[in-house]
Structures are given as structure tokens and as C-alpha cells.
Image (cartoon, rainbow, N blue to C red):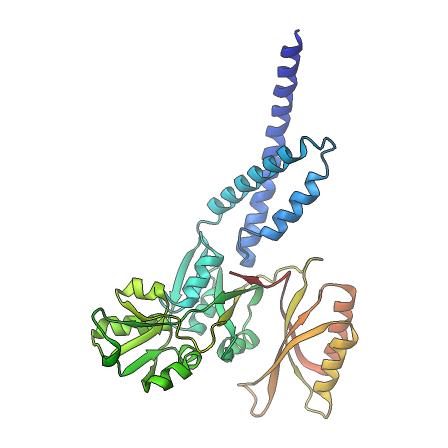
Length: 362
């Protein structure tokens, strides 16, 4: 056998071995895809990919081959994601509103291969996941200007779902009108209460009357169907395109840095892992002096940095409250488990709503 024939034989043997390893790898990819679907996680995780590339590149001793191996890995990751896209094609994601609503935009950005299913309100979208007609729901939990979305926090406290991740989406509000409308014809602006609040200074400066809609996309649809020049909506450019409206004025937010945080709600509780750096909790405390203070102290004493603490009235008990908390740290760690054990001693209810690595800005 010549030297060339020997080299070709080695390549053929290596290819046969790689074929077996490829099937083994893709079998694991199927498991990953099933986990992501059950836990409402997106396919692409760029930080995880880059971390893996750094680690795996170090396995190649020949430095001249290292960049080629990294390219090989990138191609392999791409193939794995393509396979996951195919496996997750039937995923159904619930959101509140209609096409063109900001929640719809967020859902499509997080799950580009899923079927996004519109629901009349937050509760309907939440129930769709509880009842199993959808795999997960993308719902807003807080706006940078108008604060938390209380109705969604209430659903989280009284419902059965968990949060697998939190995503921050820039919200750009526009004045949407029937084509041919001019500014001097506008009298009334319709939109969701959050959108109206986020544009309050703009609306007041123009002296516009306001009317509330279920969400921004419904407002856009209302304006399109009315066909009036005196009635306009606040909404996204996507909603304008969807309903055949024009953007009369853009970026009318009072605050140019206007973002909304969306949480992904799932039936399955995502298992915490060592890389998790944030978690969400819901709890209520005993009706006794100092109970809330003790709960807060417990969190700090165990080394966790409390980022947010919000109170909401309980719907089942008059003048009783529950608390929504966000914290940095890993709740699955030994310190985290000790903290939870201590919290149970001063809390009447305690639920870890979700744990995730970091917040993602889309």
C-alpha cells in the first residue's frame, strides 16, 4: 500500500468513527430540543456556544490546526441548531394581543420557529399553557417607565406555571393613523394603558383625549376599522404594516430608553444549574411585627443580593399582601437551599418562580 493509499484509509476509518459519533451527538441534541421545548427555552444561546468553543479549542494540541477545528465546531453547532429547529417546529407560544402587538414581537424574537398563538388577555394566554394547548407563554412583567405589570404577577402567584427566562425588549411607540391623516386632524388616541402612560407627556403636550384598548395591536386594528382621521393609535411599526396604517409620528415615548421585560412561563420547572445567576420568588409572610424585615434579612444574611421587592394585594384575603422578589445568585447552591429553608420559617407561602443564567436583551 502506498503512502497516499494509507492516508486515504486512515481518513475513511476516521470518517466511519465520526459517523457513529455524529449519530450519538444528534441523539443528545434531540434530548436537548425536547428539554428546551418543555422548559420554554430558545434554541440559540450565544454565550453557551462561545464558552464551548473556547473549551473545546483547547483540546487541540497543534496550534496550526486550532482555528480549523473551531470552524469545524461552528459548523457542527449550526447543524445541531438546524436539527433543533426542525424538532421544535410544532411548538406553540401563547401571548396576549393580536399580530403586531409588542408581546407578539417579543415571542417571535425568542422563538422564531414556533407558532405564536394570540389570546384575548394575559389570563387567557396563561391558561392556555396550564391547560396544555400551548407549550409556553410570553408575558410582560415590567416596563422600565411604567413599572410592573400587576395582573401578570397575580397570575404567577395564584397560578401553576414557572418562569424559565426573562428577556428585555426595546419598546418604540409610534402614532399610527389611517393613510391621509394629518396631525391637525387628530383628536383621540387609543392604546393599552401602559402605552398611554409611557407617552403621557407627549399626549398632554398635544392636548389629545385618550381611550384604552386591550393592547396596542387591538388599538391599531380599531383605528384601521374605524377609518377616521380624528382617531389614531399608539403602537409598533409592525402593527402599522399589519393593519395598513401609516406612522404619523415615530418614537413618541416620553423616555427614549423604554424597554419591557418579558418572562417565558412554562408548565415544567426548569432545573437550576451552576451557571444560574438570577432567580425569582413569590412569598407572603406571617401577619406579625417584623415578619417582612426578617424575610429580607434572611436573603441578605445568606449572601444574596436582592434586586427588587414588590408587594401586591392578595385577591383571596382582604388587606393581606404577597411579595414578588428578584435576586442575584444561585438558588440551587448550598447557600440558596439554606436560605429557602430559613425563609419557610417566616413565610406562609414560598414559591421559587424561576431560575436562569442572565437576562437577555433582544
